[in-house]
Length: 160
Image (tube, rainbow, N blue to C red):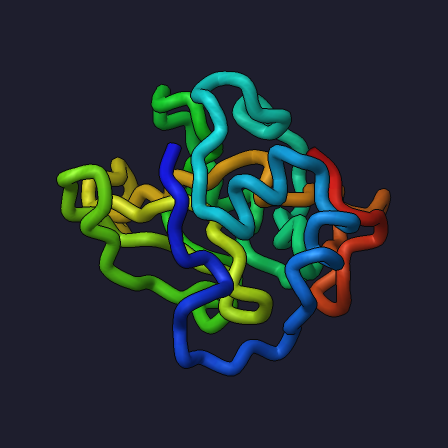
């Protein structure tokens, strides 16, 4: 795990800005560690690794819609994997050269929370594998009629 810059040390002005103490109160310790300090949850331990339900994955920090279950696939890596965001503008990609590696970090554009990393080894036509920490996500199941809510914040608070 690494201490990094999620939500701090950058010049970006985020839609959702909160003092560090408020993030600590609203998030679980693991969510805070991942979303705000850019750490990584252990593989195969996350709530959504094997979730196959239909719906949307939202940012656990701010509720922004990030990924659709239609884009999810089993990568075998131990983290939920997606081949593209549901809304491209909802995520920000930036270089991450920590831990002596060259990777691309995936960050929630609205709150600056660290979500995971994206790699160019995906099995679908996009060629992308968004490897996302479960604790950075909140799942919103599709409604009974098969429709999905496309707006607003997640219906429940942050989960871990």
